[in-house]
Image 1 (cartoon, helix red, strand yellow):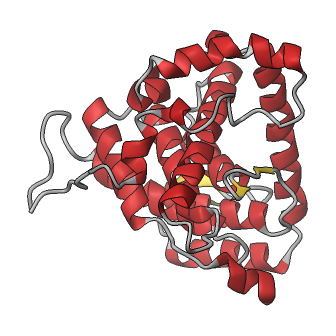
Image 2 (cartoon, one colour; image 1 turned 60 degrees about the vertical axis):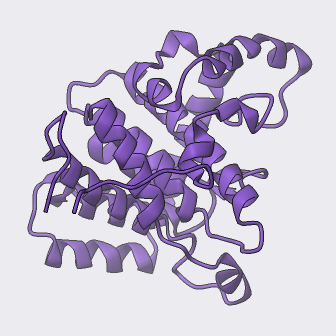
Length: 275
């Protein structure tokens, strides 16, 4: 048996290989752009058009991204951090922090506004749930959901200590672009069910982790495929009808993705894991 997720034309990952077939302008940008901004951002569209998704994940540079998108990236990052700060005061944040400290037993990342060190997946889970607790960060209507909580938890759990602010912002924007397009692809493929955002957040999260953990092309392909296969599939209509602290499941998506990335990091660049 091999650690591999087979990809075919019905998969979300397959549809991601032609990112811009899904929308004319960069999905990451807010819908309120002026016509001038949209014309300037066409250069970014041309960049995405000629780049396979794997190249987009690993090769995107901040200078490739138009100024309007960079500014929106900074605004959204601050907005999501604000959601995390207020979320830390919630009951669910206290529960998940105590839970991961009890069961994690690992090192490598920290709980926000807490300081205790836990494993990378455990931190992503707790911090994702904390950010998601109040539901006050932005999303995209075409994707039918939000992405910031899962992506921020993944970003800050995996970013190297010596990384620059430019790399942080580039990875943040790239993750959103992949996540939102995955959301549209999922809704297009399975329009009969309303998923929570965590179902497609996992793919954007996998993209960020693959870049920041320097996975190979082969490892990244499998990371995206396995993330889509193992992502939480939660019916959002139930938490809309009966609101609970489960929210969108953002922490579960981040936790699952970072577990699989630890797994994939142990595979050599040229070989899959046979079991």
